[in-house]
Image (cartoon, rainbow, N blue to C red; front, side, top):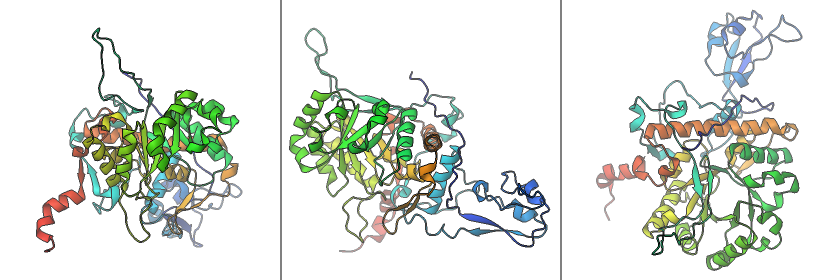
Length: 465
């Protein structure tokens, strides 16, 4: 049995202004009695350091919205109001509550808890229209994050054999392809915007400590990060192979930008790469219309790993403005199903990214058919970046971010992934699944709203032709 995978989380506040759902305001009628300091267990209220007779401004960062201070204040001097930026941040997909949840998970590494029960809606678009089968949650031995039973979250990247061939002497004649195991089904994707040096180093160090990998443009890989080459996946075009041999020969994994040339020349490209080293090649494939046809052709030509990349809201990369386009869950299901029909699904590894915004999206996209995921925007939110969908994919970096130590930024990324890992264990435990590899394509363990809606009401409301 593999050694149990553990992520070392540590509470790590970040000294930058961020958005919160509520702001605490102290009115002029405050008499500085200090009652709020006694009733608040989160220490949102303290006295001023320079004058202990007066109360300091409330600390919204630690507030958990219990409202006890407001109820206990003898003068009614405290009130909570909606943060003016709360309604503007995010958008239709990256909801404000999602962004705030990511920030808090990066701060303490804990699983988010709402505490008041869920009052709906019970469905929506994308992953919100998909529910997982939690029938095993009633088992008294359910372990989740508590470790009573072993749950393995490791996954494998690389080409796999469809069958083994032996000679008459019972000796194996099949050449077993190279493969790489990582302890959790999450890679760090290419940062979607320019990042400062300390942010880049934090992402690389966090990937190293978590024993996963980060995809970086080959131009961003400098000699000062050479010791982390085992956790860096260089991302480049076919034309850059001859000019960056020094990096390619040291890498364990490589990501190549897809173009039409690869459809015919993939075997030759892979041969050239294998002559330089032993890296496994990932084809980064935009999730455009008919992406499943392209994936099939790549797989037939010997692709080892195919990375299907949707846009940042989890939709087809080339859908027309004003139209919805297919969602990532539907794209992955289509690619997976086509590979199954062709009888080659077990031969390749399928990565999915784009719109992976919450921990629950990881097991859900794997149930749709992916082997693992890659995330980008959640990592940026963990470091205090504010996301606005309109104008499209606008990211606002904190002014102080470039001056914050790499250690702090690294730990916040580790905390976020630690929280996601804990939630993955909870979901797998509740589903009775002990191997993350078994999540792949287990769509029978999920419920899709569109399908049950069609089965239940389709005949009643079907339009007459």
